[in-house]
Image 1 (cartoon, rainbow over the protein chains, first blue to last red):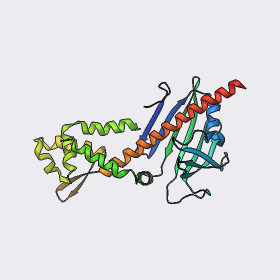
Image 2 (image 1 turned 45 degrees about the horizontal axis):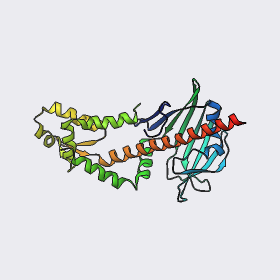
Image 3 (image 1 turned 60 degrees about the vertical axis):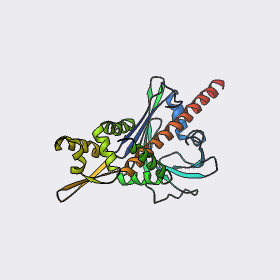
Image 4 (image 1 turned 180 degrees about the vertical axis):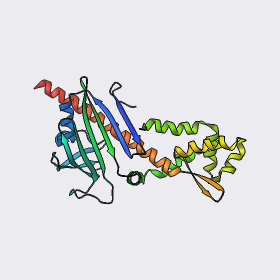
Length: 169
Length: 114
C-alpha cells in the first residue's frame, strides 16, 4: 500500500448492488482543520487532485446552492474541468454535493452522469475520520463512467487478461 | 457492503479452484454449453453447476438458455474494465489523501509558528 502512514485507517469499499463507493480515511488533525481543507478553495487547490495532477480553482462559493468550479491539470497542461454543486452543508459535520464533468465556463456536460457525494467528518480520539460515499444513480450510470474512463487503457488490460487465461490450464 | 479488496479476493477465490479455472480457460476460447464444459471433469451435474454459479455470481461468466441448452461465455470486458476502474479510483483517493496528510502537517506547523 505504498507510502501511506501505516496507522491511519484507509478503507475503499465498492458496493456493486447499490452503485456506491465508500472511502474512509483518518487524518492526524483536528476536525475543524480537515473541514477547512475540504471547503476552502485555496486549501483544496493544495491537495484535491491525485499526483501528478494539480488542482486549479476558477470559482468557489461554499454554501447551499453554491458550487466549486475547478480543474485537475496534467503536467502537460491538459485540463479536466469539474463542478461540485453543494446541496446541504452542516459545518463541521457533513455536506452533500453533486460532482460532474463540465467545461472551462462551468457548463455541465449532460452526456456524463453526475455522482452524489455524502461527506461526513467525525472525531476519533485526537484524529478526524472522513467518510465519503460516492453514489451513482444506476448501474448504467456507473457503467458509463467506467466505459468513459477506460477507453484508452482497456485494450492493454484485455491483453493482460488473455495472458492470464493462458496460465490457467 | 462489498470491500474492493474482498471483491478482488472473490475473483481470486473463484479462480483458485482448478475446475473453475479450467472452465474460464475453456471459455477464453469461446462460448460453450454446460454439457460440453462439464464433460472433462466427471463431476455430477449438481456439483458442476455450483462452480458455474460461483463464476456467474462473481461476474466472470454469463449464461443463456436457448431451448434445452444453456450456453456460457466469458464476461471479459466487464470483468477487466470494472476491476481496472475501481483500482484506478482507489489509487486516486490514496494519492489525494497523501497530499492532504502533507498539507495538514504543514498547516499545523504554520499554526505552531504563529
